[in-house]
Length: 235
Image (cartoon, rainbow, N blue to C red; front, side, top):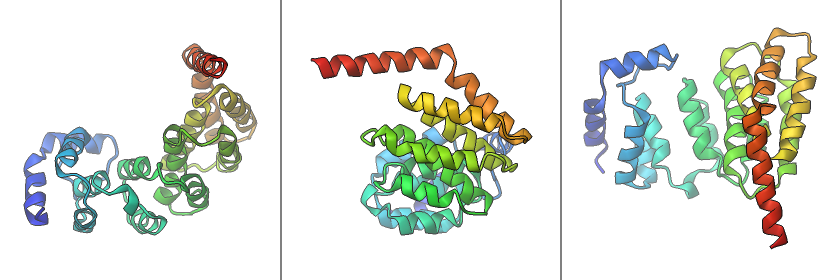
């Protein structure tokens, strides 16, 4: 597909109203057209996977073009090197999270997340915890015990006061705790420890996570999920 024609098509799909809406959600709109993500996903389905096009879209620098670049990226081309190169250029939380949703299916996603969590730059560090959150959902064949080390890292970084970091730390804690009854118990205990840290950011992370993880809805869903697994093993 011709990249110039595609960029022109994207520009026509945008709207100033949507662009202003993005800004209200603290999305970087410096080079944005104002296109809803669901429309980009629909467009990606018509395009298919295309590494060369993905690279061209990324290099264009436009916000929605970069989002689309992840949606058309072939899974086999999603290497740790490509992830690192693109991560270093991310300048908006939504782009960070959409990228991590794509990266989360990589076999080394958990290991990569643990490395990124140690980074200093705000969006790079956010990506580590965003990748944890996404991997907790998408790495369905990974043993639950493999996610336990992530909780230790979450506890270590629960005092980072930067909004885009602590929100992702909280997200990772909640997603891990919603994966299974086993991890729910571990995440709840982790949240209790975080709550004891004399820091307002840590207390917010813990309190918000505990509210969801100990809530009736999550507990009933996980209990039902556990029962289904038990019945399947008996059968």
